[in-house]
Image 1 (tube, rainbow, N blue to C red):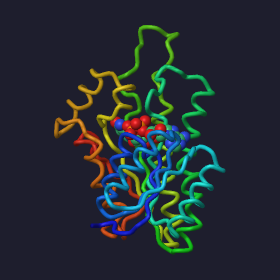
Image 2: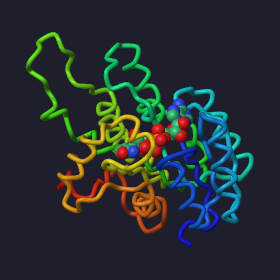
Image 3: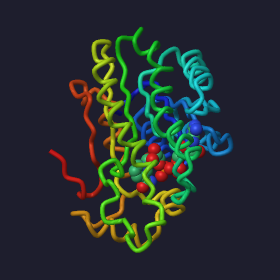
Length: 261
Ligand SMILES: NC(=O)c1ccc[n+]([C@@H]2O[C@H](COP(=O)([O-])OP(=O)(O)OC[C@H]3O[C@@H](n4cnc5c(N)ncnc54)[C@H](O)[C@@H]3O)[C@@H](O)[C@H]2O)c1
């Protein structure tokens, strides 16, 4: 077990990739704080995790609301006595509107998908600093590298540009990762990020048309769409002592489409 008795806060752990992280972290011996806005699915993950033999605590959390993130961290610390790991996984993705380019919607996406990462980091920071140890893993996306290339329709000048709010938020997550790695490193806190490629969650099915999924998979070296469980090993690595001397890094896990370095 690589995370035995560590306390891991996982945001958005009610479904999809966050749920897979919670289950895998529990199998690695971690106790889980399910920080999820949707109570029904959050409680489901809490029960599933308990059945794996570790402790779990559901805390209703809106990562885009500062008071809610502070309350979440306080409840986690009160229940478990410490916070070792923060997985900043929550985002507005399921049912995301790819057509809405209003300023309100742009701000809403950013408030959860980008500002939420900062607020949760800031909420757990005091506990990790007192421990002089902590692991923060931010969930980014290969969308941060795509830049809408090839998706522009030039037949109609009145048509809006392709959607960008999700990608821009994830670029910001990569930026936060580097900034916080520098700011928190002297306290013994590592901050890294994972950029998954297209992963077959219910959210993906609700947002990405099947033909686009096929096209994205076609451009990968391994020719396989990812399942949520395929990301969990990288998350465990970044949360475990195996990555103790690694910080400020963004790891792409996408079957081999974006090849950095
Ligand atoms: N599925 C993919 O292909 C893919 C690819 C790259 C990155 N990602 C990223 O991985 C993460 C999970 O993706 P997923 O496919 O499991 O998405 P999902 O929409 O199924 O899961 C997101 C979870 O976050 C929760 N959530 C939403 N807003 C919240 C808020 N304000 N506060 C707390 N919880 C909130 C949702 O209820 C849900 O349980 C997201 O950050 C997403 O951007 C997904």
